[in-house]
Image (cartoon, rainbow, N blue to C red; front, top):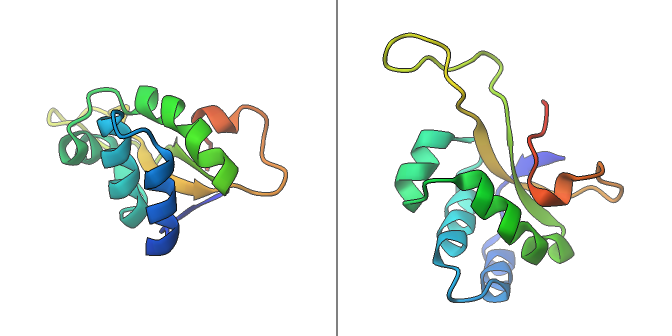
Length: 113
């Protein structure tokens, strides 16, 4: 699976599939659809979401039938926090699902690059 930008017509169909009451998921999908490989803290701020992995896990069943999912991958080198220490930040994206995806990927588990 590779991070991808979602075409506008497909994004429209995805967003209409997600319940209107699931505002965090709508914001996350819309943002990541045009901003692949977004650092955790940037996605938190842009989408006003505290726990991205929880939202991804809950929205992925709506995206899966269309061949997409939200997931994350570790950056090549750990990103430092404001104190210069390695942080636990990930790169979040919408992924296009392969024909035979790895077991468990539909839940938004961490994908290794």
